[in-house]
Length: 259
Length: 327
Image (cartoon, rainbow over all chains, first blue to last red; front, side):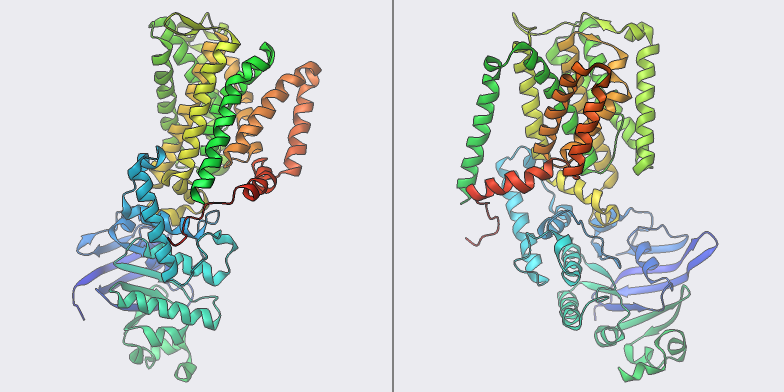
């Protein structure tokens, strides 16, 4: 494995009023890693994602992306740096079509000639066409062939989740944060999403995954971090985590070996 | 197939423009006069539609920008002797700056609180118009604003002024349609749908919200200037809250994101205001009834009616262009 660190989380805490959502988290993520974060509801997993993507500001501690501090940056600046995410509760642009949802993210790195579009100059029109084609490729890549013109709100839930992943990929991220991508999906859709995640990882993108489905987590993760009440209680390879007594007590339960 | 649709669309637009150019030959002075007001309103409402329908920011203060445009343009021409063609863009720019000044603090608030902010702003501007006697002539208003002229041609009759207003209204329509389809339009809709997700794909939400305020108030400023140089007399009460409300009603009644819907609703409601005048003090009842009935049948604005009936008809005759057909 390549040993450069892509993300360093140093001593990060997050307080909401008197409540400590995260307490002194230390985490280093290597480039090209596929790391899962697990833990009971309310253990601070999504809060951690929100801190990394700038939705919340850290109360204490530091976050570095590729050696640069990012904890004071806005979500849109962080997205431009190459960190993309999906949301636990879908946050799609519901009044837009599938390809429009994706193309919006392409604009971020594509430097669209806005005035060129408005006045329909040759450059603007060509760029328009090019970005539309790229969005179509991404839509095919996540397995939504021929659904590009549909309004996202008319798609089934599983497909909507795929649109979110396609939108995140449109940022050409080096680090992608997936927040429960398999939640609420049927077994067939789940296996599609697993293949998709493995594909994204294989192409060199670092993947951070929050997931409750232990079958998925244990099968695809290279490393697992377990959060409980805002603290890391265990960290290691899947086989280590499933034998960890603290993790079994806090989250996995005694039936984990059945998986 | 692509060329087919483009051709159809171009012919349609051309026919409409020719009809619009011939309209003064068919209509009397009075109807033309109302049509001029409709076109002026349309410019404001198109800008308001961008703000309300696309970026999701509701304003009941657009009469303020409209008024700023009118007063600024009147004062530029009368006190500084600037010609209309320079006064109009300057006045609109001042309105846009006011829009930015209102837009920045408005980022902190949304929904009903933003509405309150815009109402407050509108009242402040109105009070300035009434109280700043030395500049605005206070409650007496400004009389004798010069008519628009190019060289020796003076656009002082409805027939002549109609062409001036038509030019600006068509330009506003075209630019709004282009913005709506451009990356700006898509980004604004994204912000309106899911602000957090919009940020997560790199959209600078602050910038786009303020930009929309600027564009929207620029439009209102242009319309204000056109109004001032047409009626040649402006008064603070022309730009009071009721005017703001009527603009908002026109935008919502039209369906906010539908440019055709907004155009039709502005036309209908401007005509209705004039026709119901005959009923004296009861005219607002007629106006209100029209709104209630309209909203019952087309709860998302009359733009949706066009979508469902007329558009289907058009799609039958001219099949849509497929963007992604393999070539």
